[in-house]
Length: 53
Image (cartoon, rainbow, N blue to C red):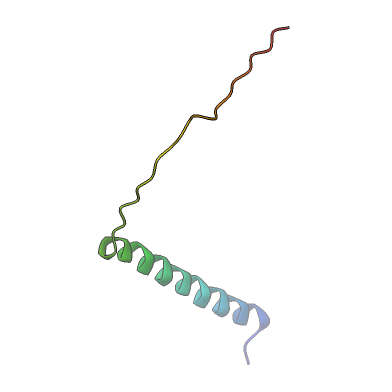
């Protein structure tokens, strides 16, 4: 029978392995599915007020 520490250690190592595999899949998919984001920035409504003391 395994101790509580051994069970927690096994579960945490399993979940960290799953997370690393998921992160690697996301990183590798960025090479396959490239995005070309487009957009504009409009500064027409920018107002700056200066206060003096």
